Length: 536
Image 1 (cartoon, rainbow, N blue to C red):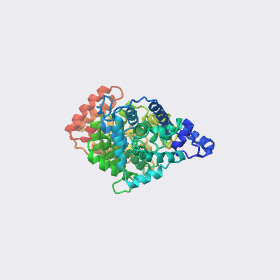
Image 2: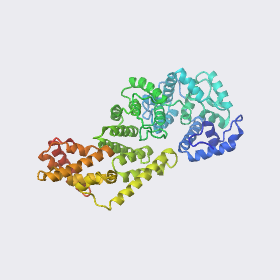
Image 3: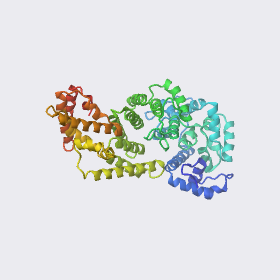
Image 4: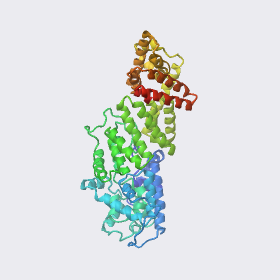
């Protein structure tokens, strides 16, 4: 039985998609192994996506072979056309810093552009030259050819001078000629100068290329996951209790990526792609402040970029985990960033998964359920899908318990304090913590701030508000209630609390009225030097 996480290799893709079987390969490919490979392809979203890229590569190769691309004088100087990407985009592509769709779009452009094709060749050659001896040996061992025709072909390529012989002649007759291209390690291809053919088959070669920087960081995340939210491109792994830090050993992939980033980031400090790579490295170490600074700089250069917003949401989530008083603000901003991503791409599974986590932190379980249900419509198999199902089941049980609790009226201040002191009382009250917070804003705080309340009632209210604040802080990392109680007693504070109560009531029926009233409350809180009330 084939393990679910053992993806198809290039030879298996060739057999399943094109029927290309090498004469020296095992006959078992057409038997049990082929059946298992087909079953894996049918059930694996990653391999299905790669199969489509193989088919795209086939179409491009057909175009090349039919002479669709006209040759030009090699000494002719060509100017960049209106559709040509900036030259730096080709180096980003070579380093693996572009999003998948952008990389594929640029490669298809290079195939038909006499100016951009050589620029991409130069970028790829520069990348190859930067590989160390150890990396070359590891790459060769990892991607050694698995069939006789590949070994023979590699030897032929090594003897060719750059561009001296057509790759389509070297590869053999008919379809096998094109199929051969898909299995080559990247280093052999560029060393032989076979630029256009390799550009044409870039999307197929991605299976056998050297890992890019973001790929290395994604592998490090998977090997040592300390972030609950998903990192784009990373595989599933159970959470580890120990967080990343500068003093903690991280996987080798992290340090390899870090070395590349240090070199490139020093030369390109204002390049959004390298800013993002540095930000992701900081996220793995829980250096969220540095990551946020880098991502904000990148967003100034590339506004509303979905990839940058996904990473920014993770940075805000990390800060919320540590920040305490401003946790709800950071969770809310992160949710807004992911909403922006989902406007452009409603089926972005990473954004849906991560926003569900944020909604749960914001005590919005119904919204979290909607995101998880949408997620499972798009991703039904694999470890991430199983994780989403477990979260969904837990949230539905919590909502059901909450709905049942609604049948009982909320406790008043004195009863709230008494129930808090009972065994299991905090757990029971915590199920309706959002309602108690709203009750406190609408009734308890204005009464507590009122100059006319008697001292006994004030003491009871203060005990209830402190108990509520402790629960919000310990269970939900929300210190707002504690902070507002520390503010100075002023007339403005009382009037501001009345306006805040009115804004909360209006929010269910009059959004503009609530917005205007909340603005007036904010100004009064500011006059009272009450930062917690102003932020609310």
